[in-house]
Length: 238
Image 1 (cartoon, rainbow, N blue to C red):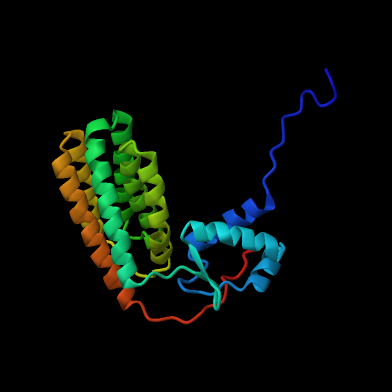
Image 2 (spheres, rainbow, N blue to C red):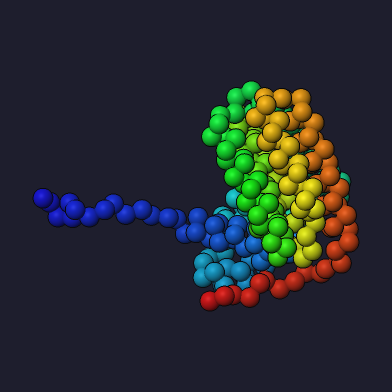
């Protein structure tokens, strides 16, 4: 056997990708505030990377809809207006209602079981009365992602993922829960039941009502949140 013949192959992760993953997790986990300015010098030093590497990661995050770059302000965390949120939900409704119609025809038993498992997890988490917004939000968006996947249209799923990035970021920063858990649980189950019955009309109608209610609750919660100026980066846990 040659030298190293029994050694496993090593994988190499570019530094930019490591920085990208770290920043994405921080954005989704509330480490930044919506609208907060990204201070490149400070952030690059904290991550121990060059500004060039950081900028590569930020360019990718901009494509994902998590940050925006302005020639005068630099890079800031995305902070959609009420009108933009309405536009995002309008597109979500168009995409997800179509996905639900398709899922009612082509979803496999495994697809439906996956939806049921997420709905059950959401119900179990909410019933404890101690769940914060972030884990419930994660399960709720995962439920909707699975509907898009069950529709069998990869292009639709990619578009949906890009649309939901700013929504996830905004809601992860809310202190008070914005979702009525009982209502969300009921609507999720009604959607699953309609899909199991292959009732595309019902699945579409229930999903649209669900998203309209979610949009309205989100707007109310965001409008009630006190205005905040730029905040410091979340302290390092190292």
